[in-house]
Image 1 (tube, helix red, strand yellow):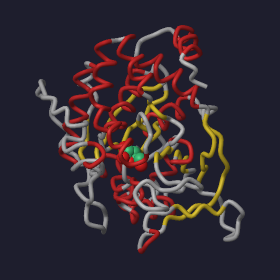
Image 2: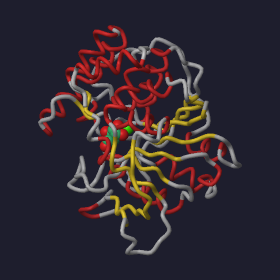
Image 3: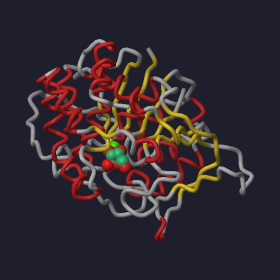
Image 4: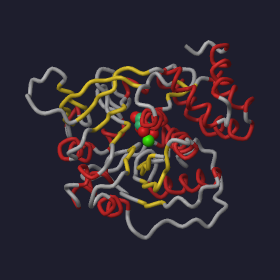
Length: 324
Ligand code: BDR
Ligand code: CA
């Protein structure tokens, strides 16, 4: 089992991503770090606890991180994820799970003080990663892999014409990480995540297959589905973050290319990823940019794991539902 630390800002799709990561047999989630993003960080941390309670995995340690971006004022995405970050389901916490005393950035900097077979999957703004990098400039060289959900290459942005939310929220952190991490940044951006639409048919399918888990998925995504309809006239919702987890597990799910990439920190193009695919700047590649995804394979994996189903059953059902 490959070990991972998940840095996240739950968040509806972060919660689905955590469910996938924790239940997937191929990986072991050794810690979860939280960052301000979709919701203020203390709300995000509560949502991690709610998720761990559901999965009966309160043993996984949680390290709370940044309350605000490096330089910009914090702007949450509660218009998209609800005031509670979980689609305004306002679920209670039933356990006494406590968070670790150490902060997220310090924990990350310390964990990667030497070579360790642990990877990081970042599902929110890169504030914790950037702060850890300031504490330990070599950390990238000591980790196994680094996967980030964020950015966009050719697809339009989701919070400005050119920027994706995670990098837009803390552009200085994203710029620092792309500049200084020192290991390949595997970027799962909007070019591929936009293809991952959790449709009303799939949501209903989940409810039929597993009323408890499916019902939870339906409840937390309802607000997000409404947002997608009003904003983009999409029926269903784009679940970005689970794709980063599924890609980490099976990197044949996405295809892309290696490139040097920088992030703009200010002005109209704040948060934009400048992907130098054609080598104008003659700089060594620091990233792999995903451009193509097999969405059917993604849903096969996602639903098999979340619904505790046989992959043959899911495959046959997806065929009938004309998923791809
Ligand atoms: C990203 O921003 C958040 O809204 C989602 O959780 C995802 O990580 C998509 O732009
Ligand atoms: Ca997220």
